[in-house]
Amino acid sequence: MFGSFGWMELMLILIIVLIIFGAGKLPQLGEGLGKAIKGFKKTVHEADAIDVTPAEQAQQAQSQSAPPTQVTAQAEVKPAPPAPAAHPEQAKHG
Image (tube, rainbow, N blue to C red; front, side):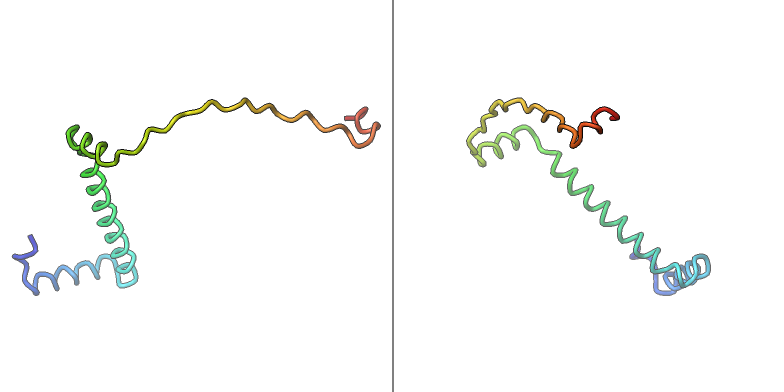
């Protein structure tokens, strides 16, 4: 795509961008573009990791061969009783 652009075309595009956005906005524009490209690459990489066939999943499960974990029941936790009032007068007005 960019192989057909010469240096004159790229300079013309740069001058137009400078006129439209101004010199102060160029660093912000470049930063935003860089973040967008990184996010796109990350999303594509994650999508490739998700697109695994069932046969590949079975091979990965066999290669990991981790022993299964057991889920144990936990005791029910009861809330603590309310603390008594410091003074009997406070309990009456309370």
